Image (cartoon, rainbow over all chains, first blue to last red):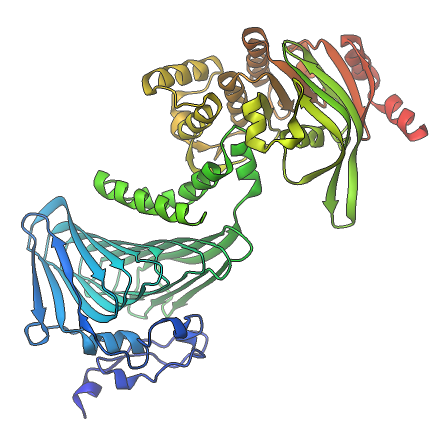
Length: 380
Length: 254
């Protein structure tokens, strides 16, 4: 058996008769996608700078970190990093095999901080690959923000490992320049009594494909995967969420709200939740709501739920896609509010249900600023 | 002194069965400080009149004119009509998730007054107005109309009327769905607005009940997309006694 094969695992048998998925650190375990595969059917492969095929790394990725007191960070080369990361598709496995420098963030045991830790990744022109590991030790509590900007092409994966009874807020922002491309797989591992609350915000870039995957390494863990995305002027944003309930009495809540406006703008949300036979007492809910802001935009939404045990506490999934309501705009405008401001109020209101969860004043302000700038851009 | 003049107004709407004419030549004049009640059966086009004058995009106006102190209202966007001094209290106020009442009202008054009201004075003003209409201060942090009862929605409309101080207000069945207590509170709000701000009111209603609390200077009967009779309070009393049958027959025979 080759080492690549040893590192491979069968992940789950998906519903709708797709073949068992694999996870591997070897890109050769995945065929070069042609766009007809279920995994890739929405992704505009012509626009991903060949990340899926043979794009070479042209430079090291740059990480800028401003860490809260007590949280350490280091940039390490391949032989200095221990990782069990197994990628689940062609691009993330290529990313996994091609990065040169990884960023490792360590949140020490019992450290509790309200201060924010900002990681900024500036994706320079050209192709680059990266890897980020966030290690939250037992009983720690912290907020980490991972912000992507720049105009280049990148594959960046991230592992977020929450040890026993830790409590992590993790916010990922994709706000690249108009031609920027990023494909990211994030893997969350939640130990006993740990709690991860994750938010992804997609506003800027030509193509953003995000694959968050959560699984548990102990009972009584909890994960929230929240998302806000707004695609305008022909942008493509994709989210493929997977929650693997592989432990007892764990809780997951997946909540994504998206907007799309303008000819060719396209958003995709695919949610998969698997409740394995062993995972009794599971409580899970997944929901995607989309707002189409005009006729030219498109939103695809596919919620899946697979239950292998009869003993779940709660399991639900839902998807709603609607149009911006003329009556809401009329109501606001009939009170003197101009159309521009009225649309902004309605869109902000639509997203506020998710942003409202995050109350840190600086974070709140930065999120709202970025969202408003994106709404502003949609008028150009 | 302001005047809203509606002349020979025709309004159509697109339906599955093609274009349908709903208003068939409406003539009306509303003057500052006066209350003009429009009464009519369901489906007569009363609400269409309200929404068309306010500029809802669903309605097309093939002919006729609406002017406010000589300015062409039909040429204005919806928000420009509000800025010119027109207000519409809706029969079914719209829910706006994620937008708080205070944020909404402040955005509206900022637009109408041309500058943001000073925060301290604004809170005072809003709280005083809410108290008068019997709304708890906690309402200001709730989302606009979301989870409001029918009565709460209508009070919220009248709260806006009192804060926005329009020249001319169109109240579309503000009385419907209210119990007697709520009807009295809402009516008092309308009367205050006429008295304090000299607002001209077009009071659209299906029932005579509200006319016991809000005394109209004029009453018009609206049937089949046009005004078929105009008179004083006595016309309302006649409607209360005999219903719309006489007027419906009049148009059917015409």
